[in-house]
Amino acid sequence: MTTGNRFPAVCLLVSLLLLVSCRNPFRPSLTYNEDDGLLNSSPQKVLENLQRAYQDKDIELYKKLLAPDFRFELLAAEVSAIGIDLNEDGIPDSWWGFDQEIDLTENLFYNGSSDGQYPPPDQIMLRLQIPPENAWDIDPEVGHEDWIVIPCSFDLTLTYLSSSTTITASGVARYYLYKAQNRWYIAIWRDESNL
Image (cartoon, rainbow, N blue to C red; front, side, top):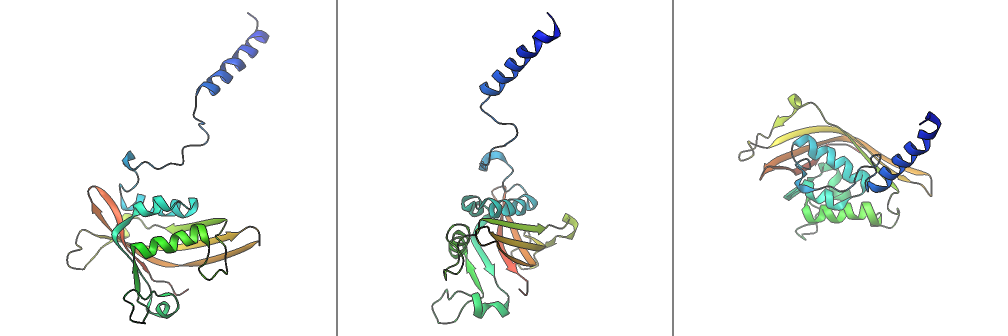
């Protein structure tokens, strides 16, 4: 057999292999399997997946990263502007819980701002500067001795393609994580930024 006759056979074989395989090796699956051991296997993985949830606008992944007793805590200076009145006493509170966080994040991902000023962004990029493990802290609060505290500088970018608008925020967030049933969760997301 000559070299010129092998080329079509090799092309046909490669084509058949590509057609038979149902998987594109250049585009890995975008689904996240809880059982893969990677989702919440470490505090580092949780924060990496937090970035991914924002980038993919994946509310289901986001929910899996938060503890059922999750709290988002605001700076005192932000409470009057963006605090939520959880106990209906007419005064905005300095934190909100899991349900409010999911509602707010769903709005960000899919519906836009609650005042209608902004539609949902076309692209969201959350970049966390996750420090090395030796810079992490142990939560000093009684009962939280097994909690990990990770301070991260962050950059958040919301991009609106139709109006060529970009909204950015940056600052510092402190993540309090704990382990339950061999999985890590964000228990507290404390905003420490003056935005």
